[in-house]
Amino acid sequence: MPSSSVIQQHSHATDPSSSISRRKKCTDDIVWFIHLPMRQAAMALGMSCATIQRTCRRNGIQRWPSRKIGALDRKIAKLENNMFLKRDRVKRAKMLDEWNKLSRERMDIYCYFMSLI
Image 1 (cartoon, rainbow, N blue to C red):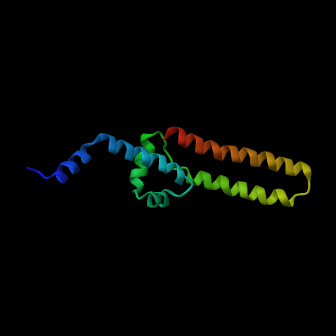
Image 2 (cartoon, rainbow, N blue to C red):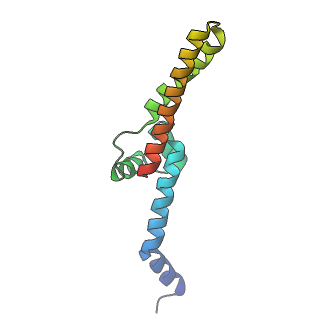
Image 3 (cartoon, rainbow, N blue to C red):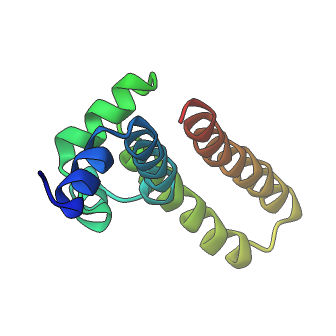
């Protein structure tokens, strides 16, 4: 007769709810790391890049968004630095409009990613 620990291990391994909740936890955690390169996100989550890629593709995300987010962050930072240097109100207003547009675009990437996961 098998010991109770063997039965518990077997029932835990075949319990579909545990793998679903673990999978859901992984996909929820991925959102916190989309600003990082995929390799760094995989290390932080304790997964492989292939697992993250598979999860993203399963949820309709074809490309890892860290490069796009990084580019937007650099543009936003450059605008922020230049806004305080310019004394012309018209140029400052244009920069503020551009800053708002880039910030919305960055937020849209996060919202889109979260809606799919």
